[in-house]
Image (cartoon, rainbow, N blue to C red; front, side, top):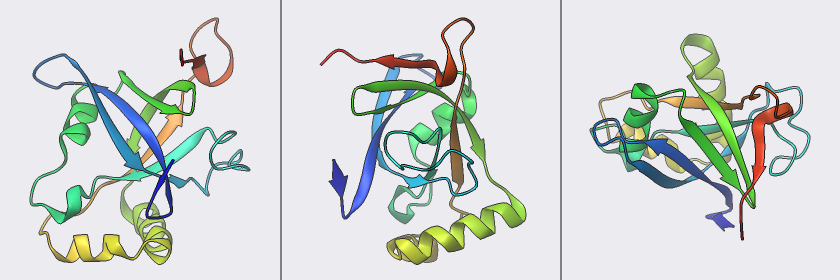
Length: 142
């Protein structure tokens, strides 16, 4: 599935206050710093998302949930559900990735212009679970 040409993932977090499972559908970008980003949707083990919140003054709830419970984050792509570890990029790496992404999706530049906050750039990297093999991939029921 795509919106405005961007592929989508379903992000699953645990509510920072409620403790309930929360789901958000986000556009994502391949992580070009990842060695295994050969096919953006099926073989990548790392994805980049932006906590733009359409340029609102506040961070999106999913970002706050990730910050509170970074060990309880999953992405779903197609029928794959993958446990990930979020990493908020900073400094020169954030700037490099921001420039790269806004050259592909210029709308994010307008979002940054509309807010006083710095829009977080987040890398979601697949995690291994003990005894379950690479990237902790589980098939979702259709």
